[in-house]
Amino acid sequence: MGNRSSLLLREEEIAEIQAETGFTPNQIERLYSRFTFLDRGDCGTLSRADFLRIPELAINPLGERIVQAFFKDETAGDRVNFRQFMAVLACFRPIKHTTDNPLNSRENKLKFAFKMYDLDNDDMISRDELLAVLHMMVGANISEEQLTSIAERTILEADISGNQKISFEEFCKALERTDVEQKMSIRFLN
Ligand SMILES: [Ca+2]
Image (cartoon, rainbow, N blue to C red; front, side):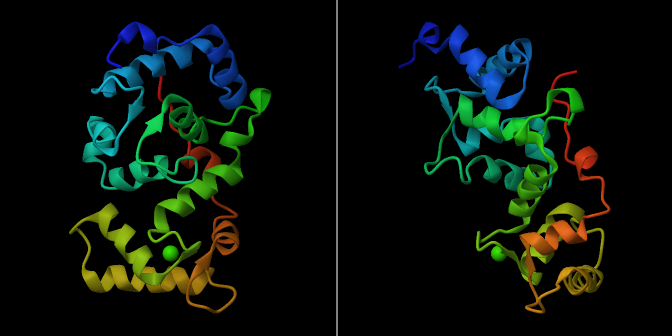
């Protein structure tokens, strides 16, 4: 613990992460140095507080939701190791047809977006969850009534089964004509 040299990335590990995520070794090393920079305790894992020290996340209205996504599924605990960190970042990697990788597929990007809305993890987006996320995104710029009406209309349009909630299938259907590949891609390293 606390020894930097023990935290160096091994060649095999880089190769494995490359195969898993599609990032190049150069990108992996640069992201690793960011990771270790955020890892204040030098323990090889990041906490939620570590993530919120990323300025872009701290000021993003959805920052906490994005951070939360790092702690879902892949991890049972409340800390994220470098491999898990990379797997989530890989979801946001822009899709290039030459280097296809399941982690940044359209479906995976949709899953990630869906999880941001599904605050209680019951695999359904309710009107209140939609409203809560809309609140985070627009802040106080839009009146409560307008937001409620947007949330209700969205549910009405997307809800095929008639249970007043949006399932993942309905979510995908609603976004059928949306360029998710483009919208859910972030270039971390330019
Ligand atoms: Ca839910």
